Image (cartoon, rainbow, N blue to C red; front, side, top):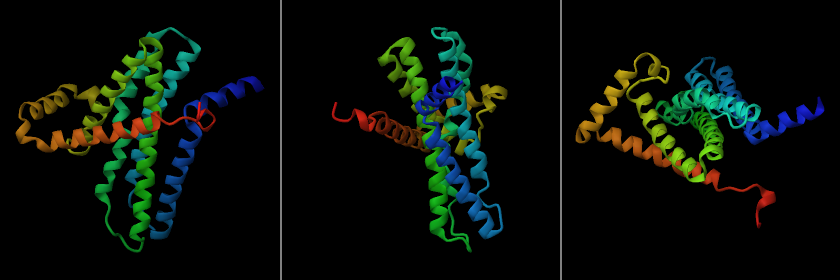
Length: 228
């Protein structure tokens, strides 16, 4: 029993589970502090968005668990992998909630800045952790170079998904119910690039942001490996 618990602990540690939970609790704590002080539920949408940010992380955990239980059975990863990709943009999407930042007395403006920053950071953390897990799985089956190609494609789709969520008002689950409408929306913008500069600019900007963010964390080594 103790061995199983230790193995489970190691697995959660490898998925950055504990710091992500800590970051989530901090964000929720800031939100509840604001709600109690202001006596309103302003910014409650952040809580829903944070829940959605956990969804792709959950699917990445599922994929990693299946890989541990049934190694070399790649077909088992297709389901959770596809669901992870569909919901992946929800994690970094919280960064765009800064659009709602206004000075709203009696809560100090600096508090709301910190509140939004904590939620945005947690969403980005969830995105990074889940992509790292999925890239590792791809690498184990297809090799290192294909895994980086995979990561690059996901980051581009992440930037595109954030745009579609913020300005197109599409949700991830709309891919199940209105896939052709979403594809049409994208194609219209691609066919008329000069009429949709915001589409290209926003997607490129957030793709670059996600890329630098991911590369920063991917390049970091544990303290016990530094100097090797």
